Image 1: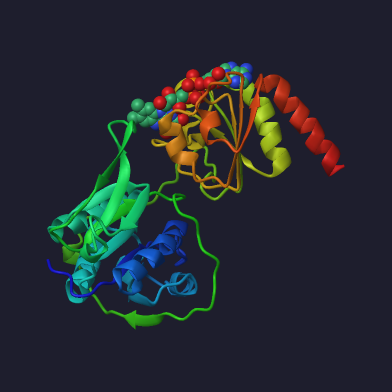
Image 2 (image 1 turned 90 degrees about the vertical axis):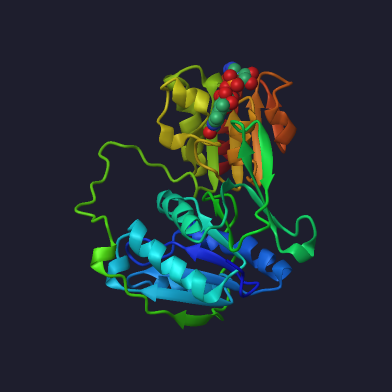
Length: 337
Ligand code: FAD
C-alpha cells in the first residue's frame, strides 16, 4: 500500500495490568529521531483492555499522538484480534514506518501484519537509520545480524509501505519521562468472537524456570567458559550481589549446562543495556557482543591479552578471574564499610 503520511508508528505492547512493556517505550527513543528525519509525527499505538497507564507512559516519553484501541477482546493477546485492529489502523492512517518490540507477541504480530498488508518486515534489528540511499526516500536502513551473527546485514524495503521492523528489548534505552503532550485518538474497533480463531483457556506459568531481569538490570556481572564450571559462578554471583546487579552468561557456559539459559546474553540470549557490564572469562565473540555492546561501561577480565573482548572494553584487566574477582570484592567491601 501507499503511505498516506510520513508518520512513524511504534506499537506499544501492554502487560495484562494495562501498563506498557518497556520495549515499546524504549522504541520511542529512536522513533523520535526517525520521525523527525522522515518529516512526520511520532505515533504510539496502544491496543489492550484498560490501558490508560500505557497511553500515559507513551505520551510522557515523546509520542506526538497516541492511537488507542481499548476493548475486552484485547484483554489477552490473540493474533487475530490484534492483527485485525492493527491492520485496520494502518489502512486508515497509512504510516510510512512501524516499529514493533521483538517480544513473543511482537514476533507473532509483526509478520502477520506485514503479510496482510503485503509489505516487508525486518526482524530483530539492532540499528535503524532513516535515509538510504538518500534522505528523501524515507527508506529505513534496517540492520540486523545475518549468517549466524557473523556479519551485519542492512535491509531496505523501498517499494512497499509501511516498512516494518522488530527490535529486541534492551537494544535502545528508555528516554526520561517528560510532560505528557500527545494528542490521544480513540479508535473503536470491535472484533467479532467468530473472527478470533484461538482461545486462551488458561495461562500456566512455568514452574521452576529461572527468571532473571537482565534487560532491566543496571549492573550485570557475566561469566563465560573461563569460569570453568558451575562452581565458578560463586565469585561472579558474589560480586553481582555486592553491586546490586544480576548474573549474566555466555552461550558457551549455558550450553555446558553450568547456568540457566535465562542468564544468556547475546544474539540468541538477551540484549542488555546496563550502566556497567563486567565480562569475566568471556572471549568477546560477535554473537555475545551483539547482546551487550550497548552497555555504558564495559569491564573485561580475561587472562588472554589478545581476547577480542578487550577491543570493546572501556577497562580491561589481563589476569585470572579467580585472582582478580576476590581482590575487587574485597576492595568494594572496604569501600562500602
Ligand atoms: P570462549 O570463546 O571459549 O572464551 C573463554 C574466554 O575465557 C577466553 O577468552 C579465555 O582466555 C578466557 N579465560 C579462560 N580461563 C580464564 C580465567 N581463569 N580467567 C580469565 N579469563 C579466562 N554466544 C553468546 O555468548 N551469546 C549468544 O547469544 C550466542 N549466540 C550464538 C548464535 C549463533 C548462531 C552462533 C553460531 C553462536 C552463538 N554464540 C553466542 C556463541 C559464540 O560464537 C561463542 O562461541 C561464545 O560466545 C563463546 O563463549 P565464551 O566467550 O564464554 O567462551
